[in-house]
Length: 272
Image 1 (tube, rainbow, N blue to C red):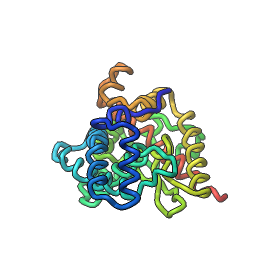
Image 2 (image 1 turned 180 degrees about the vertical axis):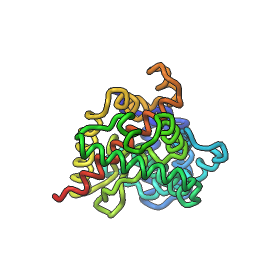
Image 3 (image 1 turned 120 degrees about the vertical axis):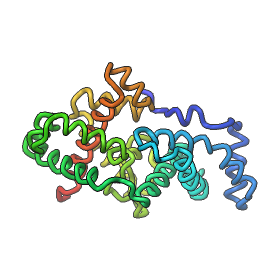
């Protein structure tokens, strides 16, 4: 399975490794403004990449240019805080910070309709109840029956939730790092920027729980997550692989992520 994202393959007008290392060294040693600017320019394509991923399914009134603007703050923060000597890959570290900056800004303007938030809570509650009862992911039919909705109503709700970005592996988990920072499901898939023995243990434990939860998903949900997050395919490309519409992929993706969130939240409630 490929784990190298398109972002890392396509990042920016490429500088040689030696030149890039020299820029990092100059900036970190003396705070060179020109070196900082050069690093921002070099890694700026990461912001466009992440903004494009976050923009999938968002309402048309949310401009991708605005997402890029929000993400630039995350990139600058990542460059300022990155510690090259730790040996972590900058792209992985930066993508997490860029996503966080974009999502924080989207949350701050609170543009998600209350009705959609209400449906999300209802579905999450139903998933948690059914999984506790059956010890496996709930089927669409079981969810519909528990919610007293028709299948069309359930699929419409899943579409609405996916379109406002409330169900993604970028959502924050209640798992703190060793500096008190939250980490995301996405952080547990690739390299992590959480340092220290306790932070490393927590991330490893979360990755293990996530892996187990993914393995227990129905095959189609598992495949959607693999193609979208590991292979960096678009939802349209995933739909072509599965032979279904992009809208159907959104529904499958949303349901899969809600299952994972339910499992991880349940694990957090179990006394250690």
